[in-house]
Image 1 (cartoon, rainbow, N blue to C red):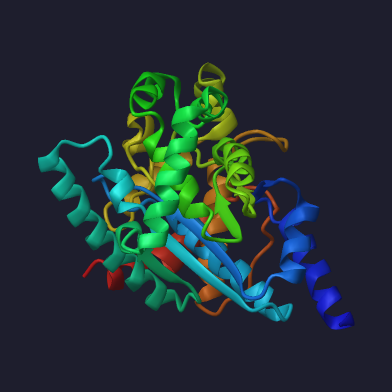
Image 2 (tube, rainbow, N blue to C red; image 1 turned 90 degrees about the vertical axis):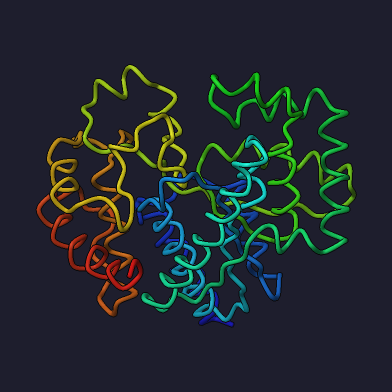
Length: 337
């Protein structure tokens, strides 16, 4: 019991000192209370997608999920970790013809993520949302959640905060169907890993869970996904992106695909240029896109058998270039054959 306590304390120190964690919902204490009592602990990270490919920001979540899985197992916790690819959710705003293409893209993404899992020996699995939704009980839960969202103006106002301003009208028209499906999916698990903007989903999910008379999950938020190759003036002019970042799993978020790393697509020369022209903060609390990329490289190195290096020690651009080329770019050649 003492060893488990020490392991949990070590996990807490890592989470606090890693530089990758933005916060918890409803609280860090609540998350650790759940970890201590729930067996098996079901953790997930869910993502929709666009047609531009998988970003390095998605890779960050796969790695972090797998790293947390390993750490929890070391604490004696039985854990199941899942990446949910939201293929059905990605079709919500598509025409019928486009929807077919989007679903096919989801199958391709499933195949690629499975290859990434194999290359890095990640202790996680990946599932399509469409497969999860085939279960009658899950379909019933989705309908119940959608009904609650449709009937509650208060919950709809909470969900407005989950989207950028230019998409609020569209979401109001759809009565937040995307959010309802995301919340229903999350309610199937115990702990969710996600970007900081999803706190608004989780606040709404708490209200919905109470109406359904069922337990709600807890959540852990990673730091925002920031665009590379931009100076600090960009973040000053776009405070919403400074606060919440881009959508990590959509390469075309805010039409900044040229400032993202797309696995198997972005040439090393362009990546190096993005790193060299990125804002490098001189104090904590400011956007640090290169520092965030370093964390991903460190985790990649860890799963390839190397030690995790000083997660919270500034942004060394030269080192990040070296580690990305060795731990990610070369490995992706096995994935995108």
